[in-house]
Length: 260
Image (tube, rainbow, N blue to C red; front, side, top):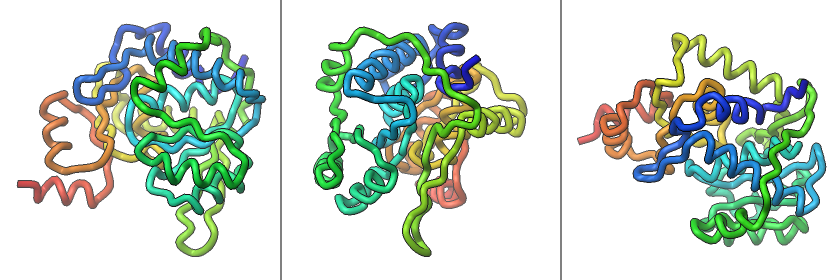
């Protein structure tokens, strides 16, 4: 039996396909649509020569494209290298070069830095722009399989901040991330598929990625997304979408307490 983390999506889509997985204001993505999108993106990756264990950069804010591409990379057998969207070209070059990534998915608003860094490492930058990206993805027939990965295989490489030196890539395994889901659900009082999580923490960081995104997908909950934190917008989303779980850092709570 494969230990691929992507099975948290395929299993949940089979059980809760009609439920909303990710929401961004008026845009809603059900689990079945998310699963189907990841299957097409996985096919795109394989068409570009992705082999099991290959690394792929992911430089997107909190938008529904992030989980679709994230789980696509995993189901194709690849390793996700999440990257801060505010990286400069030289920093993109370092992350791609150090990890050995040959592909980079980058949000179109940050395309200049992404393409500059990718060009210096020989990696291919695929810009994710609403409308255009869908056309690219739909050119591929869904690859509904999930690559066979062992529990100890690397799933994600998260880089340290580099405040005391050069950033270091921390390798997180499929079983490591899966166990994080279980622990988070237990810590939060056994939250369920009825819950709505505020997706304000950056998904390219470990907190938002593991405790919000992966934990929600594993249980079939909904994540309502906030691409860039704004306290007044966060409060609006909490009320509008009846958020039941809010994971944040002290600066977020402080900003919300002082929001007018």
